Image (cartoon, rainbow, N blue to C red; front, side):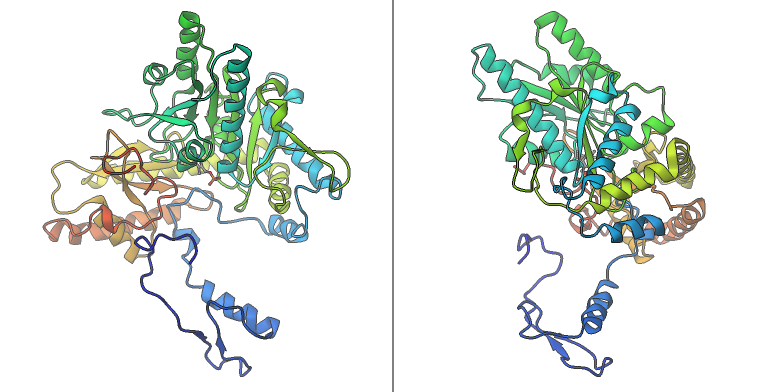
Length: 479
Ligand SMILES: *Cc1c(COP(=O)(O)O)cnc(C)c1O
């Protein structure tokens, strides 16, 4: 069984039967084992058609308002990706031009994120923000260990300060790399990290503070510069010098284009590293993220390993060894193709659609906005207080009948009482589609009002909130 907890699988019961193929192909075999390697071969066309047909049961990406990840690519980008299907990113000696394109992307991002000396910024592509976050966290941990050891102080109990709203990758980082996570709970209308609350949890064992540019839960920007200023103040008072890592998985490709005046990046001397997902608002198909450090000092040299078994001397800082180069090439293509102005137009359109949709939803009556799409093009809304007939979980289920995937979930501690619906507006979710979505939302409301009391609870919620759903370890009753 693939990694699926027996009680949480969305398909229940064993499914021992073979796949029975309708005799449309008039070819053997008409039965294919489901869970054992077939004994013999089959025609490529038959294998292709079998898999193609089964995959038609996957969802329609255009109606998926849950994911942050790109579901559309230009034909030319897809063509380049197909041409690069055999390129291994690690093999920089064999594929020097692919490696060169990766370097160019790193330099473009270093400039976009205002590294003080962009030619000295260091960075790499990754499989996504999760891997990039691991690398950012590891660099913080190693720097802290070096500082502690140099000072003759114990280096055995590192901690990392962050909001309870961080994406699940930070919970993984803390767990896998044995760093104590110090989650700042949400309070009242503060749905993400607050500067004073972050500083309160810092001590000599704090390896860094993670701030999120674009919270997964509601799309709001965390106040990165205020957190940095509070840490400046802490350093003045106590001497503790605690770096900041910005998890800009989404915002790293939104804020530079739409909010050029917002200071969240390497313009803040305290920001040591930044990660972003090329496959979210970076507009590339799944499989690419970026990790950048402001300069070589921010990335301890002893984390970079050197291998020679592919020929040449290859410095590598990554969790994976082999991985596809196609996404990196597609990222470079997208940078060339759109340029600054193209990205700006795409993201501005997303923001326009998101803010318009939010305003319309607020006018429907039964909903209150938690966010209005004016930071990330993401909106979160709740069922208004006093409405007893239905919950956000009923709304999510009703929309699903029309094909829309809109996740409903509760916020982390201390706002586990707050349940929201979230819409992520991505490239391709047009004003037209938003209008259709709104029509469907309007259409389900009278029926929900008539049902008298809620029919669905959080236990019925689908597992499609993309990092905002089930992890919640900061909730009572869970680890
Ligand atoms: C999506 C996301 C991640 C994880 O990124 P992947 O690219 O999916 O690995 C981390 N942090 C935030 C804030 C995210 O939105």
